[in-house]
Amino acid sequence: MPNREEKERQRIFLWQLIKSMEEDRDVDLLEQLAEFAHSTWAGWMHRMFTLSSHRADGVLIPPDLVKRWKRQMSTYYTRLPEEEKKSDRELASMYMDIFQDYHRKKRRRLEREQHEKDKGENNAQTR
Image (cartoon, rainbow, N blue to C red; front, side):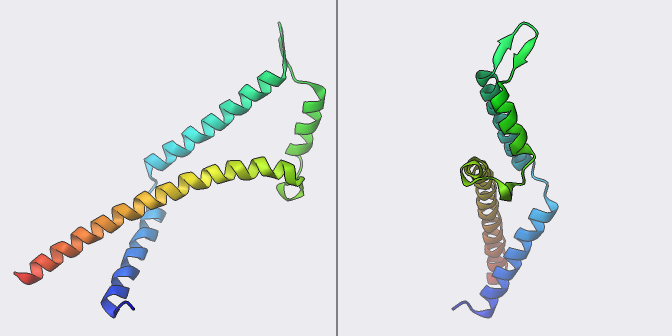
């Protein structure tokens, strides 16, 4: 069981982690999310153009796909059929992976910083 000093150190660490998440607009995270958003959009556009007919004056989306996509975009997520929710969940899961990786790296960095700080304080106390 952690002693009072250890509990206090954990409390401070968690406070620092939360504070850094609130204050820090991490450019790396922003870039990872933007890259993922772009690749998602590009994949969607590729799929749409692959499923559509190409004509001299543009692209013709098949009427059945127009009907389906219009229905989907005007339906709340909670009212979608389970099969259609599946692809949204897969995409959300990919975003969660990005956030979890970000938080793991950030936590390790903060733990290293705290360790170095504790080590410095211990060295100062032994002098």
